[in-house]
Length: 398
Image 1 (cartoon, rainbow, N blue to C red):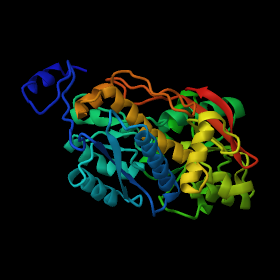
Image 2: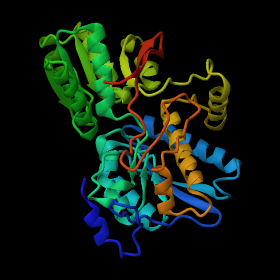
Image 3: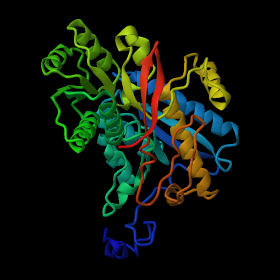
Image 4: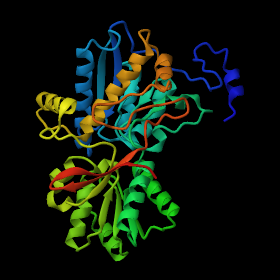
């Protein structure tokens, strides 16, 4: 990209940080005092995907406790401000405005959902507030145009839907050798990314989708989709779904004797699927980023984490809690690297420095650069066996 001239044009603007040969980015310093760092997040705590939002926030709160118990970040404690978006883009916009303007958050960490994050992210960028590790792996959360300097404030540490779906589809097609690969996906930004990964990989393998069907977010009847895919002869079905839609589609399929190989995108890889779906979802495959910790079988630091989570919230830990915990711990790592005199620019420099963060759960290492704000694309395949997710294959790329 040739944007040196643009950087020179802005060189005299004192409110903008300067990076050599890179378009300058305005970054906030609000929310940092001598004693605390204020972080914000918006989650679905009472809406259609509260089974995601509640444990994510729990995991974030546990991480805040852990960081603060060890003295904070260079002596500063983290204060987390959380708002309930109810998975509603309008509410996410209002929540973001409130946290930026009233709570003066230093960064937005782990906000929930593709439509809600997309609707509200420009509020953050306009104010110079970084958007870190949102709970969506859509491409808009990490891909940025160097000619748009405020877009450099977006970073993601989740497996992207396009790349993870491609890796999973590649492995399953080579393994199962389906004759008719099909897809059902949610009609929004999340689902479109899964669809793109599915179609791109089929094209690369010189295949065409045998059937494509969608559903509106919040739908509960999937009989028409199941009937169509059965009629189209689908023997591999990729699902760009969340929890109840996954179970709902598989339940409808069973009613009509439709039994393809089922492959879910990464949001399908959660404990609620086998817990609620029971025998309906046995044999379901999903793309995944890490092995889900089970409290009765985990060991070492993961076992300690599971027990601490259960003690604090009186519920079993799950993958959503891991993601929430990692969001805060990853921020804490880079804020520590940024040094005692924490500013928005120093945080941005630390995150783009190539410093590696490794979590306790055995996930692929997190590493960013000035040109890459996505932590990893390494994918796993997991399967539901006897009511639990088990690893089938790791270290997958497409």
